[in-house]
Image 1 (cartoon, rainbow, N blue to C red):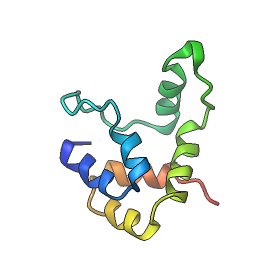
Image 2: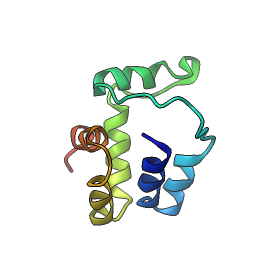
Image 3: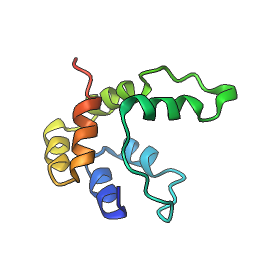
Length: 97
């Protein structure tokens, strides 16, 4: 997402999640397009492979945890102003309770 979209997204998170979201963030980093959940989960499992305990559905598990710890009405309203790819990601990544 763009810097602007990332700030909009972060503004919907509680202070703890917001801090995790921006920790070690480089706003100059190249923007990478969303991919399929399968490919993004594979990327997660390849990060720091010598001590990575991520599951094959790590992204879905994290999105569920995020949704459990935000004001869902504020969060869903925020998603409506983000690009279609971001909205689609959160729709696809959502894990039913």
